[in-house]
Image (tube, rainbow, N blue to C red; front, side, top):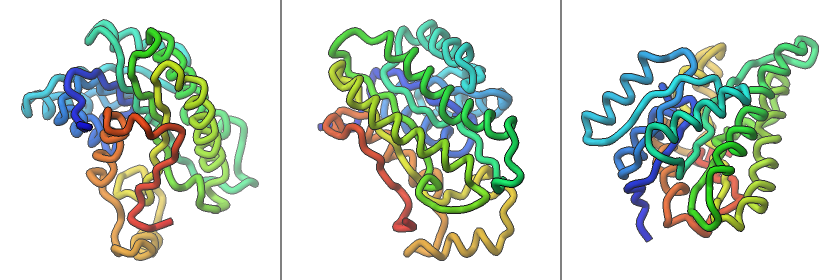
Length: 249
């Protein structure tokens, strides 16, 4: 089967930069009409759209805060207005703060669960409700391997990603009868601003050396895997967590 996404509409949250932008560009290169979502990075989102169009693809940028239920619904509504429907949903937006238990407060906890768990869940609900029976579509959560790495400073973040993996497994069973597959993709350490933020270079170098290749992942290592999972070639892949980490873990 083909990995082509020709004619499909793909909504990728948090896709104005880094992994999300790479996914948007790669899916567009495979024929998808792409919705580039952002919260604050309007200019960056426009640059992604521009790059896609210059390569002969089709894309629009839609600003929406997907950490809220209203924001997720707005994104779905605008995507439908732009392209007539949604075939692929990649829930890539997320935040990754670092605090040990003694420093965790309610605001820190709530912001992580709103962005990383609540928002994606209700956005998936809004998108799935548009689909008639037996229409093939692939909502997908994009998570990180931090969910399987024990680090005191990643307590809340890791908890959110563990929650998402379990939600995805259950949604795969719940939505499977409608032809909807739900999978998670877990990159290892990837060379992005989000990953590098707050980390000393020595730690980054140590993490890079932990992989057999001796390097960090790059965004273009991740995007093709997500595209594959969104294609007809992956129709028998459902409820899985795919680790894309170069052997890091």
